Image 1 (cartoon, rainbow, N blue to C red):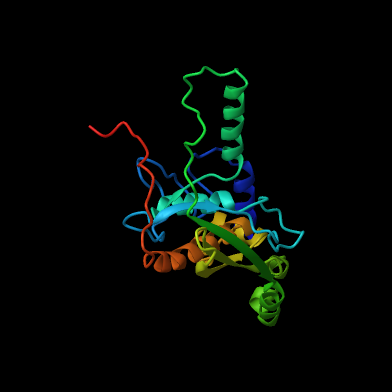
Image 2: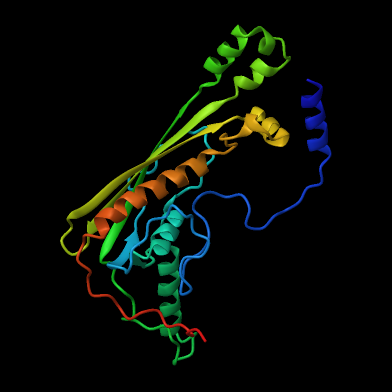
Length: 260
């Protein structure tokens, strides 16, 4: 018990520090002319893109409990996954597209220079559309764990241990990705993904500070990280189907400075 109290005191007195590149989820890094940088090792990739791809919001929204604080849309994360995998050339059909249209309107209005690089008829079509869907569920395992502790005299007598155990929760996420051919409207591929983690709550924070065997394999996480992992899982399963598609005619490659 003294060790637990000491750990909490030390943790409370620690100096706060911001570490760049730390935290986040399994969906991380960047994508672009330099390739996939910092992508998770479990990401499945293609040797070459098969087509251009647009991502669309699920028209039915995303099924989550109102108690969870999640981003409004998972599409930005999925766009990063799709570009990092190299299976598609990703085209923008959201905020970036609206900005492009606005620039064209400004040119027509005489605001921009006439030799502007922004012009009509230069955009690339989306040959496929990917629609994500999400179903999130949570199972509270704290009560059962607390019940086990209550049956063991040595553990039961440790003040607050049962209360900490009641905060343990299993967090799960299940996702799906649906791929449609925009030329034929046929759904050519679909895949589901899932992920599960154990959130220790306050107990996780405590054991994490203590270190040692008690915290091994346990993750103090939030719902968003589990959902990101589930989308990565569904993407990896989708890639197995995408690799079998015949490649469509692609637009010219992105211009780069080249490498010395």
